[in-house]
Amino acid sequence: MKTRITILLLSICSISLGQVPDWTQTTCDGTEYNMQDELDKGNAVLIDFTAMWCTPCNSIAPVTEQIWQNFDNGNNHLMVFGFLYQDNSFNTSDCHDDFVWTTAHNLSYPSFVDIEDVLFEYVETYAENGSVGFPWLLLFLPENNEHTEDYLAYKGHDISEVNQILNDVWAPQLGISEQMQPEKKLIKIVDQLGRETAYQPNTALIYVYSDGSTKKVFTIE
Image (cartoon, rainbow, N blue to C red; front, side, top):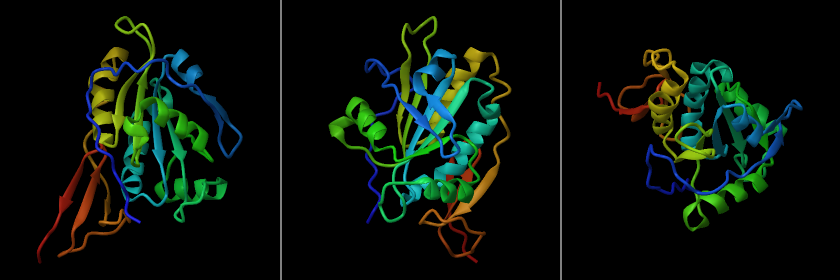
């Protein structure tokens, strides 16, 4: 089964689509989080709806982790939440799947399983034609002097766009714009199926960098 990616029109400017849907979810280790609580604390919230069978999801997972690390694990007013929808066999995710997923990609941000209800609520609110492709990234920013309500700043599939908004819009509001511009580093190489691999000549590879950017590389030897 091929991964279907729905292309959406993207913009750094805010998307006014009504009140942000609230949720309360518990991680497999028993820690509870609430969406509105995080926004009320003044945190930006990045939601990553993902699936184990999704090749692009596997590619961006370590980049999302790097963004989380760049903001000091939420201490600089960013919360990242992973919502794992299905396993490799298209079954509803469970805690075993979460362990496999987070271990494979060395993820430390909170993640949730069996999240169909939350996914469908956000699809109903934000998706065009009631259809999305994975990964589906939603970035919310809390109310400020320019916005009287919490708002959706990004929806789509490009983690580099999310990183750009965080650095160009969110970090300057926090007064840490220079801090949030780390040196661009290669964090892993993946093949066309999203599997991590070592450098191989005469093979199409994807280089994944810490700022969310990717580069397709084919070296002839």
